Length: 233
Ligand SMILES: C[C@](O)(CO)[C@H](O)COP(=O)(O)O
Image 1: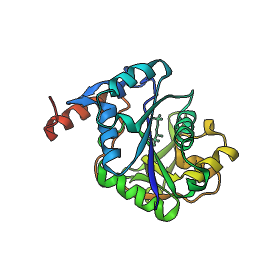
Image 2: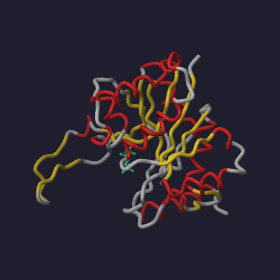
Image 3: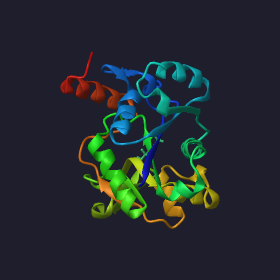
């Protein structure tokens, strides 16, 4: 019987957004709460919630009255995404016997993707539980250009291109093995780390909108979407 755990990343500085979006209220709850509820509804038993070091006490306080508070570990992020993700995974595994790591699946999710659905989360876990690792991703719809000094040097074949999203899920022992062999500071997602160690990571095509709130336009779109969904105040 396998178990499902998750790392929820919320340690970013919000430089491109202009504010720390993951703690802002979106509709009737803070951005981070949207994904936290989804992860638990998808069968995750424990979440390592990774926030900036200075915000750890604040977030512990914010979680105090949450029905899931006992199942959330708040911890400080590192200097890079890779370090934050690694800290979360190792923190979760500290409470689990090594012989159970093979049957433990951990997904890493960006708190900045609040619209993730339970259905898509379960699909990623189910594929990872079969293949060892899987991530949610979107097929590339646009024509993609490679540039040098503002000029196109190549058009890439979009049939083979996907846009990586989160959750990104793998067997716990695969992550631990990757940490021994590869540098977490050289990757921009967990799949890239696993790929660097020769692991095969399956792509699961996203079925509902799961955009990342990165720039102010994304925030405006998110507010509009929440209004449409009837989940504003
Ligand atoms: C993991 C990711 O969401 C895949 O698209 C993305 O790389 C995260 O980027 P960020 O700069 O750490 O938000």
